[in-house]
Image (cartoon, rainbow, N blue to C red; front, side, top):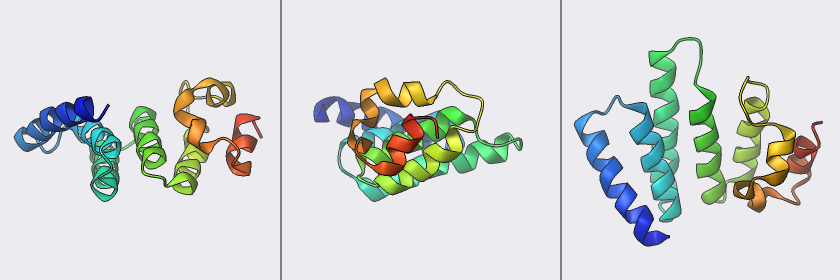
Length: 123
Protein backbone atom coordinates (compact mmCIF):
# COMPACT_ATOMS: atom_id res chain seq x y z
CA UNK A 1 0.00 0.00 0.00
CA UNK A 2 2.78 2.42 0.88
CA UNK A 3 4.48 1.74 -2.45
CA UNK A 4 1.31 2.62 -4.37
CA UNK A 5 0.67 5.64 -2.17
CA UNK A 6 4.19 6.89 -2.82
CA UNK A 7 3.71 6.52 -6.57
CA UNK A 8 0.43 8.44 -6.33
CA UNK A 9 2.10 11.12 -4.22
CA UNK A 10 4.76 11.64 -6.88
CA UNK A 11 2.23 11.88 -9.72
CA UNK A 12 -0.13 14.24 -7.90
CA UNK A 13 2.71 16.38 -6.54
CA UNK A 14 3.84 16.93 -10.12
CA UNK A 15 0.31 17.79 -11.21
CA UNK A 16 -0.10 20.30 -8.37
CA UNK A 17 3.27 21.84 -9.24
CA UNK A 18 2.11 22.31 -12.84
CA UNK A 19 -1.31 23.72 -11.92
CA UNK A 20 -1.88 24.77 -8.32
CA UNK A 21 -5.52 25.63 -9.06
CA UNK A 22 -6.48 22.06 -10.05
CA UNK A 23 -8.82 20.71 -7.38
CA UNK A 24 -8.66 16.96 -8.04
CA UNK A 25 -4.84 16.66 -7.79
CA UNK A 26 -4.86 18.43 -4.41
CA UNK A 27 -7.47 15.98 -3.08
CA UNK A 28 -5.65 12.94 -4.39
CA UNK A 29 -2.31 14.24 -3.14
CA UNK A 30 -3.91 14.65 0.27
CA UNK A 31 -5.26 11.10 0.18
CA UNK A 32 -1.90 9.64 -0.83
CA UNK A 33 -0.14 11.65 1.89
CA UNK A 34 -2.65 10.33 4.44
CA UNK A 35 -1.84 6.76 3.44
CA UNK A 36 1.84 7.62 3.89
CA UNK A 37 1.25 9.00 7.38
CA UNK A 38 1.96 12.66 6.55
CA UNK A 39 -1.03 13.86 8.50
CA UNK A 40 -0.62 17.63 8.50
CA UNK A 41 0.30 17.78 4.82
CA UNK A 42 -2.58 15.45 3.95
CA UNK A 43 -5.18 17.58 5.71
CA UNK A 44 -3.67 20.74 4.22
CA UNK A 45 -3.97 19.36 0.67
CA UNK A 46 -7.51 18.06 1.19
CA UNK A 47 -8.57 21.38 2.67
CA UNK A 48 -6.87 23.24 -0.18
CA UNK A 49 -8.99 21.27 -2.65
CA UNK A 50 -12.18 22.32 -0.86
CA UNK A 51 -11.06 25.96 -0.78
CA UNK A 52 -10.21 25.91 -4.48
CA UNK A 53 -13.51 24.27 -5.37
CA UNK A 54 -15.46 26.86 -3.40
CA UNK A 55 -13.68 29.68 -5.20
CA UNK A 56 -14.40 28.07 -8.58
CA UNK A 57 -18.01 27.14 -7.85
CA UNK A 58 -19.63 29.69 -5.53
CA UNK A 59 -22.64 27.45 -4.93
CA UNK A 60 -20.46 25.45 -2.55
CA UNK A 61 -18.02 22.58 -2.58
CA UNK A 62 -18.75 19.51 -4.62
CA UNK A 63 -19.58 16.73 -2.14
CA UNK A 64 -17.01 14.43 -3.74
CA UNK A 65 -14.15 16.56 -2.44
CA UNK A 66 -15.74 16.71 1.00
CA UNK A 67 -15.96 12.93 0.93
CA UNK A 68 -12.25 12.71 0.12
CA UNK A 69 -11.47 15.08 2.99
CA UNK A 70 -13.48 12.82 5.31
CA UNK A 71 -11.38 9.86 4.17
CA UNK A 72 -8.20 11.87 4.74
CA UNK A 73 -9.26 12.72 8.28
CA UNK A 74 -10.12 9.07 8.97
CA UNK A 75 -6.71 7.90 7.75
CA UNK A 76 -5.03 10.60 9.83
CA UNK A 77 -6.87 9.52 12.98
CA UNK A 78 -8.96 12.70 13.17
CA UNK A 79 -12.15 10.75 13.74
CA UNK A 80 -14.20 13.49 15.40
CA UNK A 81 -13.36 15.93 12.58
CA UNK A 82 -14.30 13.25 10.02
CA UNK A 83 -17.67 12.81 11.73
CA UNK A 84 -18.20 16.58 11.85
CA UNK A 85 -17.69 16.68 8.08
CA UNK A 86 -19.86 13.61 7.53
CA UNK A 87 -22.75 15.26 9.36
CA UNK A 88 -22.67 18.08 6.82
CA UNK A 89 -22.02 15.82 3.84
CA UNK A 90 -25.06 13.67 4.59
CA UNK A 91 -27.24 16.76 4.17
CA UNK A 92 -26.03 17.33 0.60
CA UNK A 93 -27.44 15.59 -2.47
CA UNK A 94 -24.79 12.91 -2.87
CA UNK A 95 -24.58 9.13 -2.87
CA UNK A 96 -23.50 8.89 0.77
CA UNK A 97 -26.39 7.66 2.86
CA UNK A 98 -26.70 6.02 6.26
CA UNK A 99 -26.85 2.67 4.47
CA UNK A 100 -23.63 3.44 2.62
CA UNK A 101 -21.92 4.31 5.91
CA UNK A 102 -22.91 0.89 7.24
CA UNK A 103 -21.32 -1.06 4.35
CA UNK A 104 -18.31 0.97 3.19
CA UNK A 105 -15.12 -0.41 4.78
CA UNK A 106 -13.48 3.03 4.55
CA UNK A 107 -15.59 3.94 7.57
CA UNK A 108 -14.51 0.94 9.67
CA UNK A 109 -12.24 3.07 11.90
CA UNK A 110 -15.31 5.08 12.95
CA UNK A 111 -17.42 2.08 13.91
CA UNK A 112 -18.24 2.02 17.59
CA UNK A 113 -18.14 5.81 17.86
CA UNK A 114 -21.62 6.78 19.12
CA UNK A 115 -21.81 9.82 16.82
CA UNK A 116 -20.93 7.72 13.77
CA UNK A 117 -23.32 4.94 14.75
CA UNK A 118 -26.11 7.51 15.04
CA UNK A 119 -25.34 8.78 11.51
CA UNK A 120 -25.25 5.20 10.19
CA UNK A 121 -28.71 4.64 11.67
CA UNK A 122 -29.97 7.73 9.87
CA UNK A 123 -30.55 9.80 12.97
